[in-house]
Image 1 (cartoon, rainbow, N blue to C red):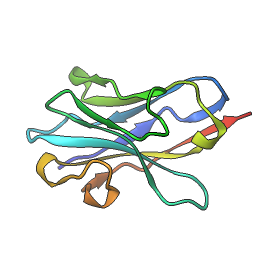
Image 2: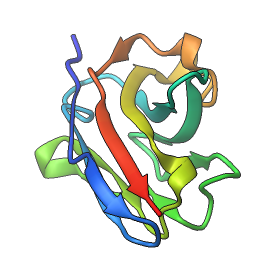
Image 3: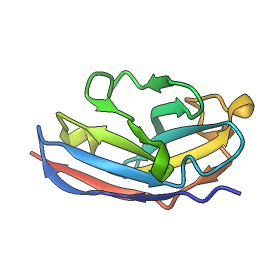
Length: 125
């Protein structure tokens, strides 16, 4: 029902910016929550940010609050992760995920039904 494709990852220096895309995030007739998660080598997958697609309601991890935002382009059914003031500890594979609004706990990866394949973000010193 929902297919998500991440793009926009790459190599950036600390303090720089990068924008990731999650195509297909808004291509549904049902209300969804779309989330961003990341997983660094040797670490568990962790929550980054999420948005309730049909409302302007967002959630952010404390580690990224004030640096990352999740703008949307409804016409393109795409959600973005705008990452500013990047730090080396932001290095990870970043995933977007989707789930029905009423079934998702935004910070809990296990409650999402659909996942993209991920895109690598590497932040150098």
